Image (cartoon, rainbow, N blue to C red; front, side):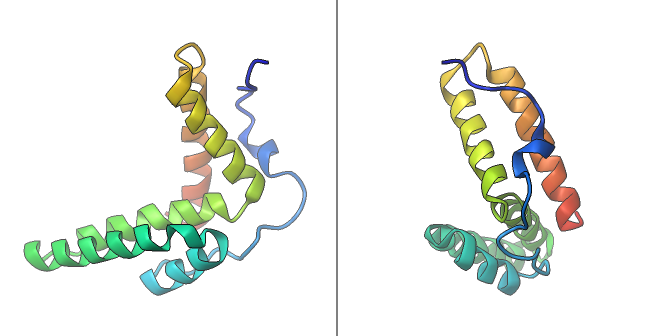
Length: 122
């Protein structure tokens, strides 16, 4: 069976509300959101936050913390919608395993990421 690479990211969410509202763009609020929607990712978030804080201190810039917030805000925006998150994972799998469908999958991944960034106010 051929995977569906329709490119219709808006249809992925379908009817219904997201699992949680989009949180504020702070490390604490993003951590709380990840705790609800993807608790298995908390160790990764914590490690990323520690690394970002250390880097920010070393280079005396908030840029690493801004990158942390951006990355996790997009993650939350995608994963608070179960259908969108499932489609995103499916597309990532297509990119990893199917050379013939990879370009279409990458385009749809980018579309989902752009929608998530807009949803997060980035």
